[in-house]
Image (cartoon, rainbow, N blue to C red; front, side, top):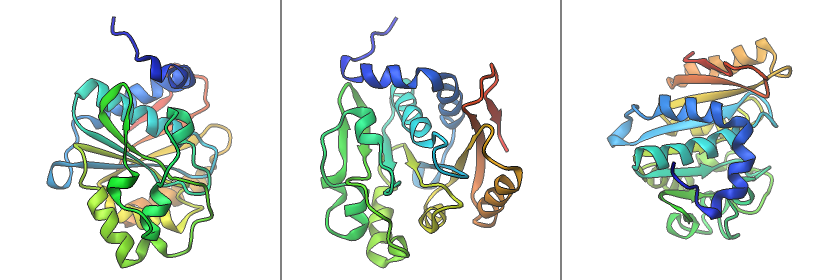
Length: 222
């Protein structure tokens, strides 16, 4: 049995509760092909505190470990960043600095200790998102460069119904995984999110019902 790197031990304990979810998601994403050979997948939710950051981080790690191909994980949730603390990465510039034009892609990307095929771009210091910042030409240029890095690009996005920025990010991805929170995500809001994704012309690759104690937590392709 493969021994897990010591640097990931805290994170491994953290994802134990979502491992069946994450393993199912990454294995379904592995065969995907996107633009110019890069599969660009957004993981988002209907509302906050649904666990999509944990799901997206675990999926990126699973893809990198098991496919042995390059993976880039981008944390775009500026309001509530968590990836750096999950993976115990050093603080520094991140997605917020990149789209603000105060840092470069190269300065923001970090290697993942113990997982050489995974690069991580955390959100950086938490801040309120600025309306329209992702639609600015400089931000779009930076995002285009960022979304070309890796065989897989996993985007941990803010909640779709709570963030205009998340809707802008749909323009840069090939597919979406929508995370729902058991007992909280209402059917009408789920339909609204699915409608936004469909109108953007982006494929729904699956939904995840999180925090639901069941042997079959992954609902399959939408």
